[in-house]
Image (tube, rainbow over all chains, first blue to last red; front, side, top):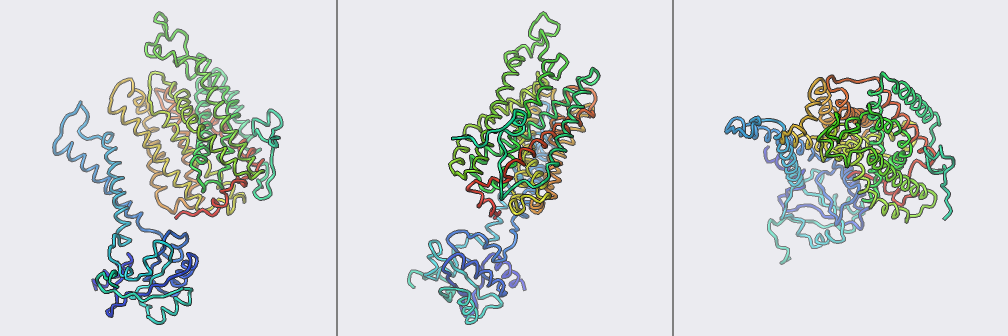
Length: 204
Length: 423
């Protein structure tokens, strides 16, 4: 049960489990960005959920084609901001008015005026940290090991190639049918990826 | 090069220095009644305010009320000028489809010069708002009007220099804005991409000139009302309010034009989103600057500086200060925070109106405690001067706006702006 939930959460980050026979998924190459957007939309409309696209540069409209929806990272920013504001207020009030009050040139032990800069800074700091941290976590990054790296072709993804990857963990996944579907949607080549659990790219 | 844009009569030049141009693709389609009504209402209200206000009973009040309304109009126009200058300098693409609005609004300076006459009369009047430092004998130790603090500032605070500075500000602003306006309309006709470069070159020196003159204009028009007090950040504070007001004005104009059936598909939800983000950003910036000014004075605790805030925290003005804090910062901050609000015209337009009222309220809060130290109050002249001048300004803006294409159709970046999307 818990394992299933964890797998679900990891799947939203783009981290998919391999099948028991080691099949990680299918990697399809597309000739140009337009074909990739097209294929992503059709794959989504065919009911697939565990898939991702890879390209050397961001492609406008890909979010909508993949059905990614609005990023939720903004809520984390809000939580970070409110925590920072609360922490800064409490910290300054407790240290200067409760724990160790010192009279400095007749100023009140705790006043909002001098406290606001710190409240502002901590609001920004925690909001920013949670935004960046949350963004990385929601994307499943950093991710030094990815079974897709077994593919020699995939090396070109940072250069001139456009890939769509469908994970074997998707409930609609079927080795033959999915491969036929990808070919049908315009893939120039489709490759089966196996997860060996260790990196042997150099010896392959 | 012959000048196809040479304007006609002198009076018309006050509204628009350029001859009208035709646009097939993006014409102004609303009836002229829209701006004629605004203009006539504005003129009527301003004339009544001046006529009644110049009588003995209301004179002091009138000078202040008029100054506040006039500075409000100057701030919107200046803010629009800054939008255009920064747009050209950073070569921003998204704003091209709606640039014509701040551009046309920034060309209002000639009108504002005419409207400054009551302010200048007030400056010369011994009972005017600036009487504290314009009084005869202020620097003369034997005079009963001798003021030791102001006597140290007479090199700056004297009527000829004040008028000279004021002339310089308005000549500079008029020159920059009308040139940008002319080049942009010329680009509608010629579609010459080189004109974009010329506008950028103009903005490169125009922006620092506008920045410095804005800061000193804020010192002159508002800070010298209380000549003992000083704050170096005051110019930035004025800019923050003006820039915010200009975005509100632009948003509101677009919402109104779209209701009248124009700019459909030209200004999209994505553009509203960006305007909303800028409004949100400058709500925060205004508060940041306003608080910086307050905190340093609070911390220093020097009587000559704290007095300014003391006047605004007693005798009813503390309510105004509170309204300013919540109405100009906390409430709009919370409302503008969610993404959805910024993407829809109606809620954004309502907030824009609210923030424009707050901009006036802010100027009122800066100026009026000088006159009414003992009791915070509004006067009907405050309202009539403000509404009258604003309606006159907006009417003239719409008239100017209606005489040309309502979109910068010659700008090579227009295509990209139309397709703009927030990622």
